[in-house]
Image (cartoon, rainbow, N blue to C red; front, side):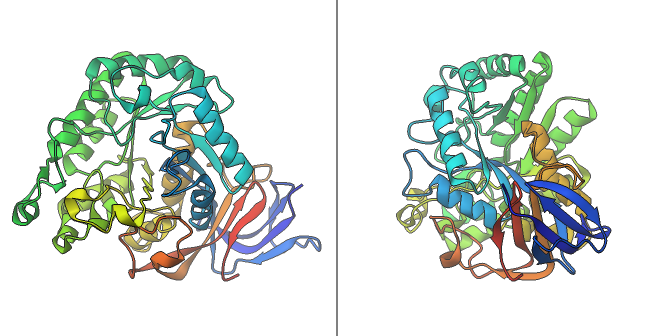
Length: 427
C-alpha cells in the first residue's frame, strides 16, 4: 500500500489552484480545503502540478556498460528530473535484441522501483543493420516492447527499414529512427559549417539527417505504419515533418533539451563535453526547433540522456564519445527557453513532457489527466525556482553535462510515482 499524500494548493497544469489527495496510488479527491490527518502533506503554494514526465529516449547502459550508468542510478536521475517513466535504449552489451535481454532490463527497473523502465528493442540484430531482430518475441515478452530503435545507428538500408515498418504493424509497434546517413557522415565530428572548417573538424551535413527523415516518412506512409524520428536537429528536417503531417502521414518527432538551447558555437571551446550525436547546429536551427515544438510539428521532448565515463570525454575531440546526460536538467531548460516567456503554455508543456510521449509508446498508466481515479504519477514544479547545474551533484553515475555552472529558471521539487514520493526537495 502506498502512503496517503495531500498536495495543498497546487496550480493544476498552470490553472485552478486545488488540493489533491492521493490514496493507495490513485488520485482520490481534487477539491479545495481537503483535510486528511493520516496523509503526508506537501505544501504547494505557488507551485504547478503536472502529469509525471515520460522520456522516450534514455540510455541506461545496463547491462554491460555499468561504468557509465546503471538502471538504479539512471532511475534516480530520472526521478530527480520529474520523470515517472523512461525508455531504455537498446545499445547495451549485449544489445537488447532478444526477449531475454528486454525482460532483464524491465525486471531490474521494477526492482529499483523509482520509475517505470520500458525497454526499447533493437530493430536489427546487434544493431548491425543487416538482419531484423526478433521483434515479435520482444513484443510478446513480459516486457511488452512496442518501440524499436537502433539508436546510435541508423537503419540505413531502405529495404530493411521497410520490412521493419511492415513487421511492427501486427502489434501496433513504432520504429524510432536515428536519422543519419552513414555515408554522408563518415568521420563527421560536428555540424558542417564555418566553425567546423575553422577548427579543422570534419563536418556533419544537415542533409545526412534530412534525407533519412524524408525517405522514412515516405516508406512509413507506403506501408501504413508508425514512424518516430529521434532527436531532430535541423530546420530542413522540421519542414519535412511539417509537410508530412499536413498530408496526414503517421509520423511523430522529438527534440532534445540541448538542441533547444546550444549551438555549434560551443565547439569553439574545443571541449568534447559539447560533442553529441546528432551535433549541435546553428542558431537558425535552434529557433526552428523551438517554433516546431510550440506549434506541434515536433511532438515531444526526448532527453537522449547519454552518460559516459570521464575518460571518454576528457580527451581529444576526435577521440571523445558522443553524448550528454540530460534527465535532471530537461524541465529547467524547457521552462527557461519556452515556458517562462509564454511561448508554450503549461498545457503544451504537459503534452510534450508527458501525455504525447506516453501516447506514442502506448504507456497506458502515464500521461494521464490529473483527475480523480487516475494513477498518481505526478510532477510538482516551482516556476520561481532556480537551478544552478553542478555536475558533482548529479544523480547520474556519469557527469558529462554541458550545462555545468549554468543557471536556469524553473525547478522540479517533487516527483510522485505510483503514489509514492520518489523525489522531494525544498518542501
